[in-house]
Image 1: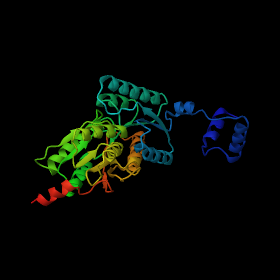
Image 2 (image 1 turned 120 degrees about the vertical axis):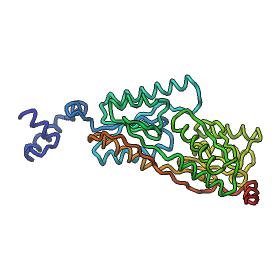
Image 3 (image 1 turned 90 degrees about the vertical axis):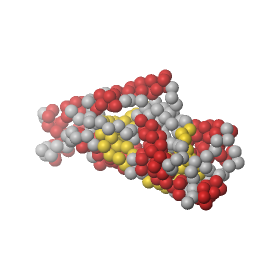
Image 4 (image 1 turned 60 degrees about the horizontal axis):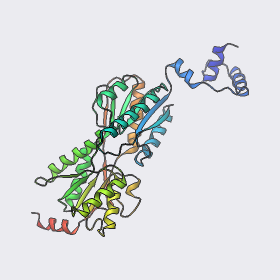
Length: 340
C-alpha cells in the first residue's frame, strides 16, 4: 500500500474507499500512530492554529474574551494558542518599560516558531507601531484593545470617546461637577482612555478643570492612591477609574476612612469585570463587549488567512451599566440646586 494512499486516508480525503480507510485507520491505531501536526503544517503551509500574546492574561477582563476566541476558532477549524506577556502595572519606569517590551517580543517570537496562521496581540505593553507592523509582515496580526491605525495590520478596540462621554454625562446628570480621573499609564490603550476623559470633560463640563490622579492598574493601586488623596483632603465628589480593580480599591479606601459610596463620593469603573460585582456597593461601570472582541478578532484573522489584503479597524461600542456606586451626594445636590 502506497504512502500517499495511507496519508490521504488518515487525512480523511473522500477519494479513498471506505473499506480501505477502515483497514488503514485500524492499523494506525494498533501501532499507536498519531499524525505529526508540525510536519503536516509544513506540507500544507498552514498550521490551522492562531496565537495570542496578552499582557496580564490572568486579569479577569480576558476570561470572557478567551472563551469567545476558543469558540470562534473551533467553529473555523482552528486551534488557539496563548502566551502571557510580562504584566505592566502602568508605572512609568524606563527599565520596567524595556523589560515589558522585551518579554512581549520574546513571547511573540516563540509563537511565530509554531508557524501560526495569524496572531492577536492584546493590550500590548510597549511595542510601537513599527514593531507591530514588522511582526505583521511575518504573520497576519490583529491589535486588540490598542488604538493603532495601520495600513499593515487590523485593529479591534473600544470607542473610548463614547465610553467616557457616557460616564461624564451620567455623573453630570447627578449634579457632580468635580469629576476626576483615577489612572494613568504608558500603554497606548491607557493613554487613549485618559485623552478621552479630557475631551469628555471639555465637552460636558466647560469651565471646570479636568483632574487626572496618576494611578497604576490594579486594585491595590487604587486603594493606595485614594488613601493618599484622603489623607491630603483631596476627595472629589465623583471619580472615573481606569479599571474596575482600581475603582474597587478606591471604594475600600473610602470605607476605611468612614466615607460612603455613593453618599459622599460616586465612582465609575471600567470593563464590567468581576471586580464590579465582587463587593459592596456594586460598581457602576463601562461595559466592554468582550465576547464581541474575541469573536471579531478571530473573524479578522480568518479573513486575512483567506486572502483579504485591505486593513480593517473595528471600534466596539461600550455601554454604561448603572449600579449602586453612583448617586446624588450632598455636595452634588447643592450643585443641582444652583444650576440655572
